[in-house]
Length: 353
View 1 (cartoon, rainbow, N blue to C red):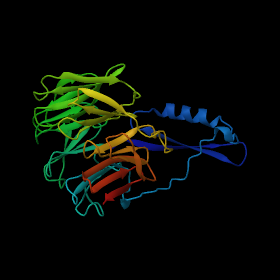
View 2: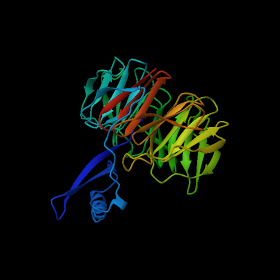
View 3: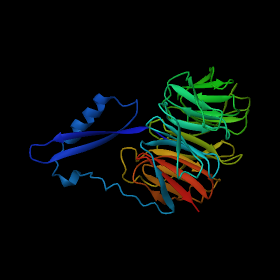
View 4: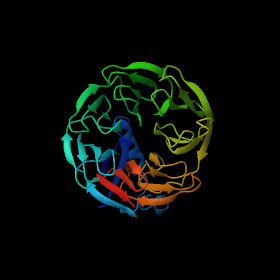
């Protein structure tokens, strides 16, 4: 599950022959160009020769470890989803949807000009590609797609979850919608500072919620008709709405708000902040958790900037599994031996034990 950023390059000619090149990363559709130019003006006011204020990044090299670069797209790979160890789907910033049947080594483009942001597959036939203003739907495992209008503009992460081919939930961060006819129509069922959602069966689901100074988890037992509050904890995250939620068994879940990871136990009644490693240089996204994928209550992966971290003790400690050459937008594992990462520079990385 990925996140949308694009590079803006601003070159500023100095008095002498040298020039300063500033690269700013901003979230698509959210940061006004005027603000970007203003930030650039402030940064260029610093003296180039003042080494005490230098923030020169390291060259964009990688250290992939047990990961391998298996393919490169002609655009940023926004999200990636695999049905099994061989068959997967990826969406790119160039508006394409592509399929692979050889574990990601090669890809066949199936659609173009699509409003791309996030993927969700209910099974090996029904899948959904969520854009800012539309939702593309496949009923053929990605071979063909049709487009429906979204009920609202969607700029948040992890915005959709389907519990059957026809019944699904969609959030734009402030309103939760429900469809029972495969996106033909939507009904508003809840409003508030909604984070991510996850359903363990068609009736039982969970959402994260950010109040002014706390983070809470809510649950429904009746397919979204009513929700009740479970656990709560203090907010340690910033206001950026990057949020993910994943249950790994009947009682344990992990979720995020922006730059903070939380662990939920006792079926969401106990919420505990998890300490993660400090960010390493990537870009201004380096303090944001771009995706998580947990395989069990103890084992999981976390993408922060261009680094993929790994834990095998339930988040008590993390080690670097991979350092990519660009930000890692999305992670997807089908099991402990087969995983993939989608990157901002178009790279697709594969983890294979």
